[in-house]
Image (tube, rainbow over all chains, first blue to last red; front, side, top):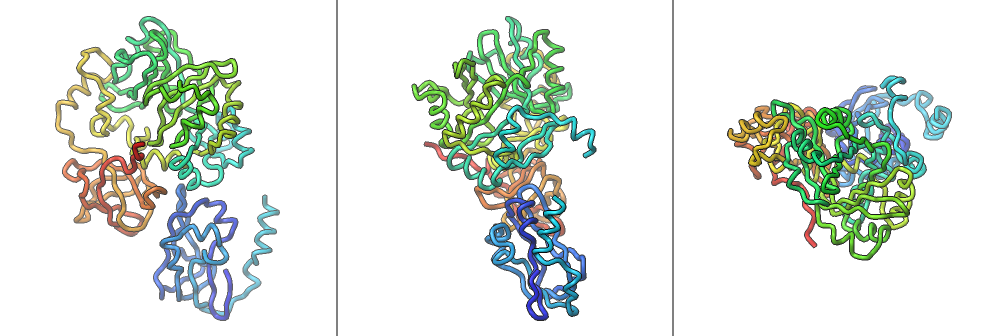
Length: 113
Length: 367
């Protein structure tokens, strides 16, 4: 997740895309849908598995990555860039301390491994 | 899975090689199997466009020998294997007395009185017991051998680099096999496979398995895992036991009538039921379904007719890397099982547009 003003861009982590393997289909919500924290807003599918996408924050979907319809592999090749999933207008200012940075997440994964 | 079950999984002879190549290992039919190496799409395309190899040593391999072996083998499988020439192989089935499919197998006639049967891993124990009940000398060589399936348009060229370019391999016709000496051992090379591509399945003594794997890698063959094997076989519309076929399905509705010989009059398990079924109109037929809209069909999803009424359930489904579309198979009422019929697949909350297409989804271009 990348916060830009009162909006956040959501994607999956590099670790998650690697674990899922080649992504062949992404289903995203309609623009305008309101998301609650923890709500499922779509799925990413690899050849072998279907994984639900959960909102880490509350807000309204203001854009979805239309490019993934024809190129779902962008989620694998560029999860923090062109492989973004949705853009959400935050329902309330973010308490950034409650979420992990990519560095902290990597450190956590490294510890857990 | 419980810890106890995990520790009971059987390991491939070449397990260390798979792990060294970065394989993700997953349990399958009681074995620890390489699911994928670099990635399923890359492996799938390698087999369709160049050459890939699968370690399928988990499959049950049994040898039978003796003057009466052909006769006895015929009594437990649906195809009249007695008509095979030496060096010829054929697809066959183990049926129940009701005509259901207990397993699908490949039978190879290695000599006048020497046979090899390759069975699915999940059914191998039952299959071997079936053979042993019919004949005394059944030699299970599953652990003693390694089986590698080398498949793809460049597979034969790669195999010749390993086994010799003297023309003997190229002379092996589809569904024929050759026993040849390789590094002091006997290798069985059969022009068979499960991907819809040209290539061979190689069976060598376990001690030579690592050397064969290494030689094929050096010849440019890419390792491919079970995940790619499944997308490849489904594109080729080849049935998988436990999905398209099982004890509740019959050979004729599955389109496997070519594996059933009735005209020889010889007795075999399931014969009476199969004769009866063969004389009837089939009520349903295994059909190929391709999504017209985006989505990935999966086994177990409902198939609906154009009006939205549920008519079946997918036996398998996946994203086809070659067609870049969702594909699946299902038993459909015969009236719906013709190419061009519009149907729908219930993908989660969405009835997704689909169409019955000709079987198979993919057929390799003829050279």
